[in-house]
Image (cartoon, rainbow, N blue to C red):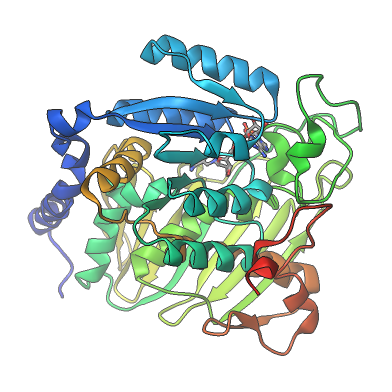
Length: 435
Ligand SMILES: NC(=O)c1ccc[n+]([C@@H]2O[C@H](COP(=O)([O-])OP(=O)(O)OC[C@H]3O[C@@H](n4cnc5c(N)ncnc54)[C@H](O)[C@@H]3O)[C@@H](O)[C@H]2O)c1
């Protein structure tokens, strides 16, 4: 294919937008009759994103939040207040998700707990016959993910949507089409990064807030001393919960790269990095590069959580696809085609998408229409496994070879051990519970 002139290029964009129209109309297509039948949902975890998800569900329409659950009483009260104001009825409040799941009439749950607490409520909700919207990353470890995939397969009538909402971004979708049409020729490499200067809190151990049951918050994971740096929101950079910047945030761009290129699981994974600047303050790498070799082309990731932003701040957060004939850089609401050749004119497209609302609308409409949503458990497991292998490769200091069929690291027993974390106390790892 020849390099595009401007008219052809705009035509491509228009075609891409037209291809998106079924998605765009998802929320709008909800008929007044079906929207009138309100889906009764429960929220598990109502910190920051639990309420972002609840607002997205209201925006999508046709829901009633009948129950909320959180191990922090303060979050529970605050969210119940907001929901009562929004919908005119106060939801029931629970500390334990098991009690919420037992509520008669409940149809679906939205799980927005930190990562150490995704697998157990997810599997329990499916077993109770509920539909599940679960936040990313799918699981804390690979074996949990396998148990979650098995639970979804055993309950095919329940809808699952995993919170990789960037899949709804028109910019990412247009780039997928643009690449599929051959405009870059063979894509040789993709590179993703999110430059982020972490705002750190006090890492010194202190008593948890009176309203928070810290033991339950840590749950099946390790019981670590509470500090502001490992508590609400900040847990992302803690190894026993968020597992760091690649696992928590970079996972969105690894997911998008994989989907845009139509790739499955990586074949090999290597990583370098460490705590070069923020040692003693966080427990995951502040500087990291990872290289994932997939069948079609490698995807690399790099991050740095300190210092200044990129030379060009525009590229702080995005993916570049390098092709033999040109490159594309893409982020949530913008993409740039960089044709090959010195000084070739770049073509910039800005497209705003309310990805969170579209992703939630797709989940709710799938429930109404008895079909599946687009981000399935198995697909989310592929992305989550990819970033987990990145973290394991860094930990063991070796390049890993992944057998996707067997879901095993080949020839590296130490790395294999990290595919499953030990569960604490009376909690039983769902993968071990399967056998
Ligand atoms: N899709 C996205 O773009 C996006 C953005 C932000 C966060 N997230 C995801 O949303 C989830 C929550 O993140 P957040 O930023 O809201 O964190 P947060 O710390 O603000 O909130 C988490 C809440 O879960 C509660 N919780 C912990 N254990 C619980 C349990 N066993 N039962 C009930 N509640 C429990 C906490 O008390 C807290 O209120 C994470 O999985 C995160 O990765 C996704």
